[in-house]
Image (cartoon, rainbow, N blue to C red; front, side, top):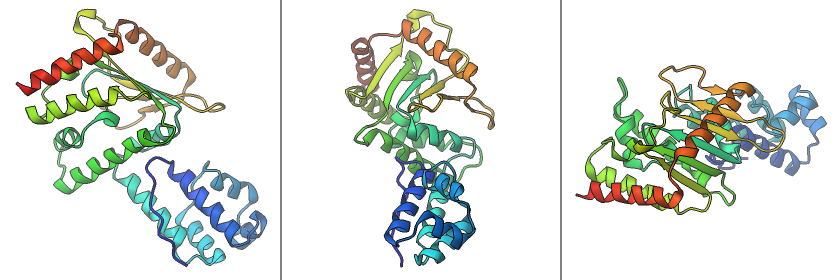
Length: 278
C-alpha cells in the first residue's frame, strides 16, 4: 500500500508523522497494544510518537510499515520530513518546533526583515552571500524559508508582534526594485489582523536592543515559553530557560515602549517604499 504523503510546513514534523501513524493504525484495525507487540515497542513510547512528543527512527518506521501492511508509506514520509528539515541550517532546526506550535511570536529585529516577513527575492539576496554556498543550496534555503511562512496562512495562525529598527527599512540588502517590493510587502503584511508591525525610530535613542535580535515564543497552555537569540555562533540559539526567556520578554516590552504606533509605523514604511521607488 503506497499513499503519497508530503510534509506540511505549518505542522511539526513529529506531530505530522504521529497523526498519520495513528490514522493508518486505526484504519488497519490495530490497537496500540497489537502494534506495540508487532514492532517490539512499549505502549508509552508509541503514545509519545503518536502525540508528536518524540520522533521515530527509520528502522522503527520500516517495522511499522511491515506490521501495518503499508509498503513504504511511513518510511517515505519520514524520509521526506527529514529532507525538508535538512534544507535549514542545523542550528535553526530546534526552533522550528516552537515556531510552528507557538500561539504568539514576539520579534525584535535590528538588522533585517525577519524571515517570516521576507519576500523571496529579499531572502535570496541574503542567503546567496553565505560563505561557500552553491546556487542549488541557495534555492533550497530560499524554498525552506518560504515554506516556513505557511504558518501565517493557517486558519488560526500565531499572533505575530514584530518590532523593526528604523535602519532595517533603509539598509540596501539588494537592488532598489527588490527593496521596494520588500517594503510594499511589509505594508501588506501589516494589514493582517494577526500581525502587529511597529518601527523603533532612531529618534527614540533606544539602546536596549542593540545587543541583537531575538524572538520570544508564547506556547500553548502547559508548555513553557521559549526564545530564539540571534548570534554569530552556530550553537545554543534556542533557550527554554525561564530566567533567560523572562529577561528577553522584558527587553521586548522596553523596546516596544519606544516604538511608533502601528499607524505611524505604516507611514514610515510607506515613506521608505516611496524612497526605494525613486
